[in-house]
Amino acid sequence: FSQLLTFFTMTSKFSTSTNTTNEDPREPNNCPPLTLSPDLTTERLKSSFNPLAITNFIDGSADATSKRRLLESWIIRDPTGVFSNDDNNYLHRSERHTRALAKFVRLVELSRAAGVGGKKSNNTSSSSSTSAVNHLEGEIIATPEFLTLVNAISDDPSPTSLHWVMFVPNILTLCDAEQQAQWLPLCRDWKMIGCYAQTELGHGSNIRALETTATFLKESQGAAPGGEWVINSPTLTSTKFWPGTLGKTANHAMVIARLIDGSGVDHGIHNFLVPLRSMEDHTLLPGVETGDIGPKIGYNNMDNGFARFENVRIPRRNMAMRFAVVDEEGVYEKVGAKNKKGGSGSGDAASKVAYITMMQVRAYIIHSSNDALAMACTIAIRYSTIRRQGYNADADKKREENAPNEIQVLDYRQQQYRLLPLLAASYAIFFSGKHVLARLKNIENELVSGSTAITKTIVGDIHATTSALKSYATAFTADGIEDC
Image 1 (cartoon, rainbow, N blue to C red):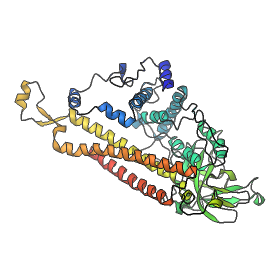
Image 2 (tube, rainbow, N blue to C red):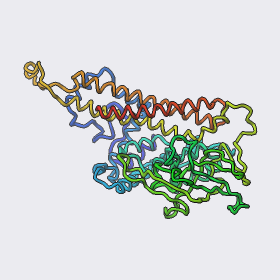
Image 3 (cartoon, rainbow, N blue to C red):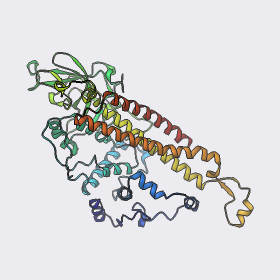
Image 4 (cartoon, rainbow, N blue to C red):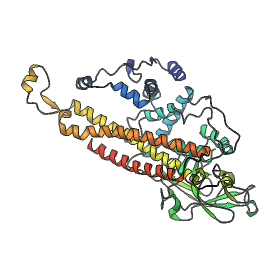
């Protein structure tokens, strides 16, 4: 936090005080706006609780609130003007995509100038082939500061968001230390920009039915030294369709495909790192057909795309090899299979670990549903406070007191009945999403460490929980926004 404050002091004329009682670095002179409606002020004075205490609780602490507000002020006051959303609704979709990329580049500049993603005390990694690289100096995307800045942009998701939400976590979870050491620095430096290509035209969450194939080819069969995978889209319905970041932005994809070993045996879905475009000039590579799926009702910064593969060859080691390996002869083996004696430990659950990333995205959607519903409730409740409608029976008396002679809309019980339960629900969705995210992270850590505590039943339970909560939270939020 001291680095952030130092950076802000150097790049701004404004105060950087962390006093969380009255000052707000997002506002001129660190004070609340002078144009605040007196009706809002009156209602807030009637509150039986301290709103700042609730804010601190949601953020995690008073210091976290102060830090969030400071970070948000960078976006609000950035002198480049790139973060302005004033003309978003008047831009062509291609312009939206280009503008969003410019915003992201500026966000990275701000983060790096402030030292976000610097050295950590646990910057160590084991030489074991199954251990993870715990921290990469200069990597900003996993830091809370970066995520706060992303949220502060207040726009549709960045075209690069699938890179840090799904692509990099997939490498960290499913790839061994040698693979991480090769690919993570490229990800950090934005030379490798990735997406997560699972959903196909014919199948989405039913991953066992995915049709894209990765067939092993031995060196003796004409492959490069060490062997290669041949990626193919054998049918129209096997076309990867809808993955974000795929249409224009990504130059690599974590492709979910059926693994066919050197003997022609199908071992089900596995993850493969497939180059899509040149890292030099961004041109499509041979055998890869990809593009944007076109305008949507929303999320038009995001280049949701399609991809087809025709005999695309990738190195043998481009298969994620933390939990399963294929040797140069095409022999498939699960890591730890030789030592596995029982059927209920993490070895049994490892078949589900590739799906952890998708479940995490569901959890993010649950968590972010709260944001959308909370914003709608905030707008509707504040407007209901300052908007007046209907004759007040005590108008004569109130007129003597120079009070308005119309009723605040929020004072109608029907309005309270419609809005206040939605506000309460937004809190419930927030904490549900937060709990599910924490639970998933715990399961992921246990699986990666090789613990036998996580059974297939536990993984199945969290799969069902995230599926149901995603459906419920998003449907409830959409209906709630309509009510607001």
